[in-house]
Amino acid sequence: MTISRNRIAIYPGTFDPITKGHSDLVKRAAPLFERIIIGVAENPGKGPGFSHAERIELAKLALADVAPNVEVRGYSSLLAHFVAEVGGGVVLRGLRAVSDFEYEFQMASMNRHLMPDVETLFLTPAEKYGFISSSLVREIARLGGDVSGFVHPSVADALKKKWKN
Image 1 (cartoon, helix red, strand yellow):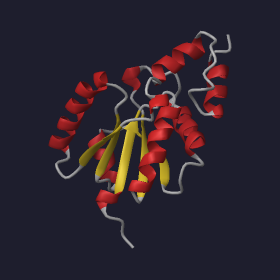
Image 2 (cartoon, one colour; image 1 turned 120 degrees about the vertical axis):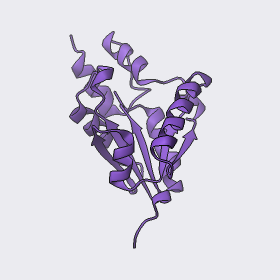
Image 3 (cartoon, one colour; image 1 turned 45 degrees about the vertical axis):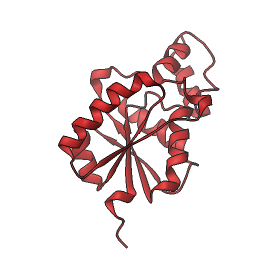
Image 4 (cartoon, one colour; image 1 turned 180 degrees about the vertical axis):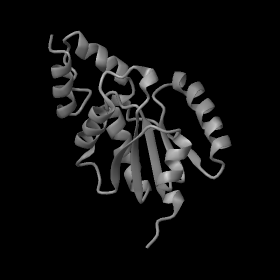
């Protein structure tokens, strides 16, 4: 049986690191699609704290028990090329605050030009995760703070090891 493109969602991001906000969005989107592919972008321009391979592995660990229709894959190409490669029909994006909207709207508009047959769907995280960002989590961990309330235990351990000194 072939899955319709519109039933395959791609959730792209740098996920440096993946947070409980990201996981919450995936959990809530999983029943809406036959398949969700978390696309971990290489994105060296952002200067990620974790390598591409580490971010893929951490995302797999954090999402292992979410749903059987969730898959984590890395990519280093243009999102439009990755979506075409995996046969996606929907790009899933999270909006934490109004401040995210302008950037996300611009990205969705550009993606519409690059992928006219692909829709962008915005979801908001649960209120208890709305303030969490990967950059804040990295900063707290770097300064020796407790991030266990914001990330999966495996991610918290990896952050501790990374900034042990």
